[in-house]
Image (cartoon, rainbow, N blue to C red; front, side):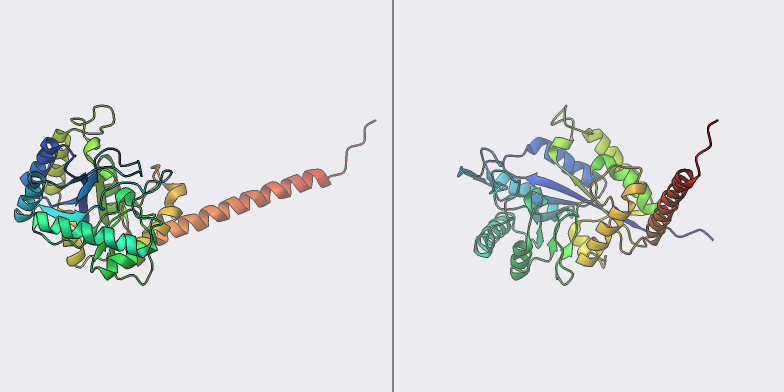
Length: 320
């Protein structure tokens, strides 16, 4: 009897869609996902800071224009685009830290999120319950405001705060486009019954936009999506589809994934600071490896101490 494959859920999240982002390349990215009938979650910025998002000083804002809103609207109608709110202006509020929300009081965060979502939903005509904080940075106050406003989902990264009693779904980014194939291999080999991989990418990841910083071409994205859709052990879903489709995306899962990542770090073939994929349970194989490694280190240290003691304690030979 043929062995049944477990499904690896793959979520693609594209950030920084705004009136200042390059429309031509974005349309080609969306076309690639549409070609393969693969959903894509897009983090849209309602009022992008027009000069420098790293500069916290006041500057003109550029609202999401109709041509960009129409792209989201049509993509949602086609069943391809899942629309997420990606901040208010994506402008850092700190001169030495990249964050639009961290450290701000409840009233300020409430006003920013209320205004941003209201405008995005009005120009696109589609409700959104997914929040993607700029630079993946948020705090406890952000979570409280999101719940108060009826958001269901936060998508940042694995480093953020995640209270065990939070009602929000947590869908952190776990890898980049060029890491995806390795992430799937690791997820398939794991004992996890419901692996989830969240692929975060930006426009600057493409060679067509930035020949120096880019990691792959649009053609390679097309080939990657073709490879994924041909596999019988992967399922491409949007953030909203994952949250509403019964996938465990609780804060507890993210906390377990973070713990597993820390435990696995000494044994990993990859140098990474993120989750690579979300674990739904404690990886006891990794725990065993950590315990075994610790015992070997302790035994080796004890042996060295014992040999050193024997050498030092031995009587000196008489010299004639």
